[in-house]
Amino acid sequence: GLMMRPMLFLTAPLLLLLIHMDALYGATPLAIGESVIVTLQAAGRFGTNAPVPELEVPAGILVETPGVRVIEKGQMSWRIRAEQPVEGDLKFRWGGTEWTKSIVAGEPFRYLSLRRVTSLGDSFWYPGEDRLGEDEVDWIETRYPAAEVSLAGVDLHWIIWFFVISMVAA
Image 1 (tube, rainbow, N blue to C red):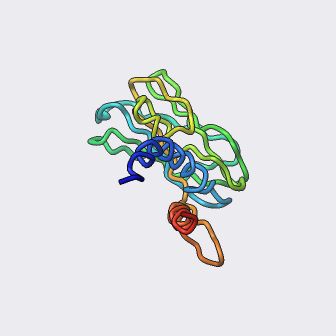
Image 2 (tube, rainbow, N blue to C red):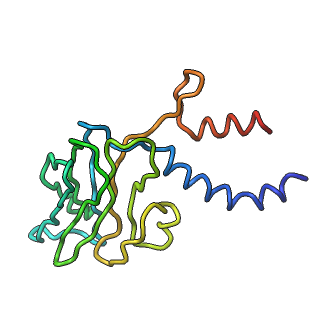
Image 3 (cartoon, rainbow, N blue to C red):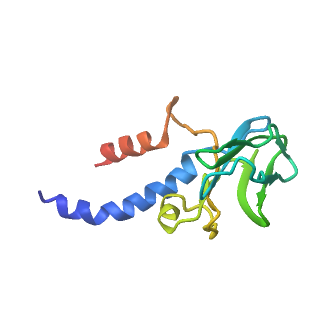
């Protein structure tokens, strides 16, 4: 009972800390030669005859597949591959509007933006980039590979190590 009040005061700052730590420890930049899926979520459904969004990638990134539409969900996905170290922006063009999403490959341990979002509420959970600010796109996501932290020869997700070390320290 005595710990309940301090725990309530620490919940919000700890949640904010965990969200930012996940952007740092939860995923790794693309390795050279590694592929990843990039998805653009439209605010509504794609029409069957609607123009296809275009994807422009920075030097060092190769678009492996043309965009694949999921009409019912309003999503468009591409598979891209890192050919050399790069830190830049993916550019999406659709209906005369352009959006960007950061991409990192071949770099060491970094703070990564997994998803760039439009809504203020979602920007709390995905704080890595500024909000899109457009009504036509809900979010753009890069599915970076999950990272594991090695400690004493044991590879586990960072959140497990965080809670184990926190409990031992407590």
